[in-house]
Every structure is written in structure tokens, then in C-alpha cells.
Length: 190
Image (cartoon, rainbow, N blue to C red):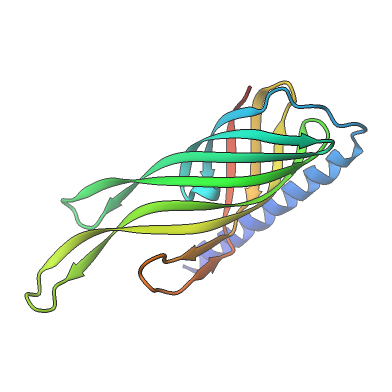
């Protein structure tokens, strides 16, 4: 267990250092270009989806070096409570980010809301029977990272530090914070 924690801390540190180094390098650009390719479709591993997702993003506002971006995605998580019963449950990551940069290289910061369905086992205290129950869950991903996107479109890449605030919407449980999370995305902007 200790090795897993050490690995996550190292991965977080390397991701953050890489994102900051690339974003500082992008400050040497002289003028901001207007983006004609405002849409992107990409696969995200980790990040705001929790595991993986196919996402669509759209730049809905741009002025000089600042661009505002909305993201919606979809994923299916495999949930298995026992050896005989496996189901796939939907996950919907939503995110709003601000991009800061002039040409291809951007600092990306934002937050989101990811909803998902999960399963729990309930026990009836009178009959001692178990029942399988689907429950709603959600978490809030935060994002600080690097985004490579050409104004005219084409290859799209981003990497980010994405800590997660987990909250139980209806169960009355405790909120929790997971600071060791990151994500990487590859796709195409058009």
C-alpha cells in the first residue's frame, strides 16, 4: 500500500512540474490568435472522469489570451459485487475551464461535476436478506494543467493535475478530498 501512495505522489509531482514548465515556456509568444477550431473530441484517461471518458469540448468565448471552454463526456464503469453479477453503469463528467495562452500552448484551469451510478448491498434487519441497490454518486474535479491545441485545428493534447472532492449526495456520508489524481487526453480539434 505504501508503494502505491509513493507512486501516486511521484506521478502527481511529475505531472505538475511538466504542466508548469510548458506553460511558462508559452509566455514567449507575442500575439494571441483567434481560434477557428473551437470544437474538440478526445479520449481522457484519469482526470475529471475518474477512470476514462470520451469527451466533447467547445470554446464558447475568446478574448485576447483568454478562452472559456465547456466539456461534456460519457463513460461506463464496470461494477462487480460478486463473481456472478457484473453490470456497467454510466458516468457523466461535465467541466468548465479557462485557457490562457496565445497560440498552441495554454495553461488550463477549471472545475467540474461528475455524476455516476454505483451499487451497494443493503440488508433487511428483519429478514436478514441482502438486496442489490443502485445509488447516485458525484464528485467535483478541479483542474490545473497544460493544453496543446492549434487555433486552426488538428492534433489535441492535454495533461493536468485534477484533485477530486468526493461528496455523498444522498447517503449522508462524509465529504473527502483526494489530492493525488491526474489525467491525460488525446484527440482532435476542428
